[in-house]
Image (cartoon, rainbow, N blue to C red; front, side, top):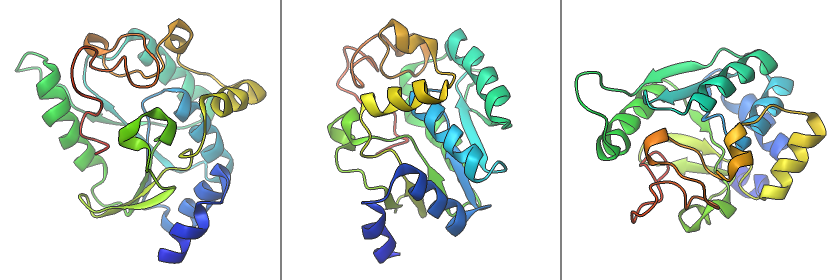
Length: 207
């Protein structure tokens, strides 16, 4: 796998995805938060392996626009998104509980029995992601992590979305570069709108 890690750094996103499908499917799953990165990834996946697994983590406090985009994705890409429930009806929602516990636990369930997962992580998103490789070992979870869009820019994403007339999250048009849960997401560039006012840029899913 060491050779593949090196070789894939110069590969296109489609080539990275094709490699991941060939090497890991059906023990491969793709994380989806219905943002612009997944607009691109799911379109590519549909052309490579229509039966590829896709999952989302539902905290119970997603934007209404996220739920609407979810439906549009399933209709356009012909995919049934697996749902990992991360909300706790027996305890009030808090950012600390959601991000530090429930979402991470849900991810562990999503990755049970798989060898690799595909993400929309891009180096341009922020310093915590600047060193992301297109294929890397997620040692904490014992699986491979595939980041086909690691070297893509915002311009690359929007060019692809416009060229293929893809559905995308409408909050992107209202200044939300990164979209999470409704109570703790505000408009902002990069990931600055996530947990605004806090010294936090990650929820624990991407360390």
